[in-house]
Length: 180
Ligand SMILES: [Zn+2]
Image (tube, rainbow, N blue to C red; front, side, top):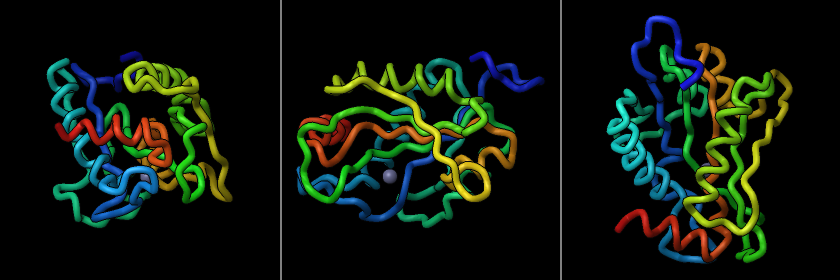
């Protein structure tokens, strides 16, 4: 990783499983809840990153722990990168046409390069219909997203990884497959 902080002998990544409890049920596949997928995925990703010698911390100890978005980002103090894991939705109905990965990056450009690399990699692995992309959203006081703002406040590049859309049947089935 290019942006390891001085004094770190290996990268340290903070993973955040987005939401908690039973949150964001898919209209396309009934048994899918975004919150459950995020939790499963962050445990798989933690194990995978550790196999590469990357140190991993996580924001929450249990799936039902409620935590403010800003606090999640701020929990990455001392880490080199903060990743909040999610799946996206377009409206509240099933939509088979929209199927892409978007990575939300800080407005200052600090996450553009790693964000696009991750968007491309996730797209390839998931086999999404449209290409992966990065986006930044401006709020009234800096970055719109609280997790990105919280991470920035403690000096960490924070990204939100949207693993395509749980309004898309194909991608929702793919994400459910993480459980098996
Ligand atoms: Zn989400």
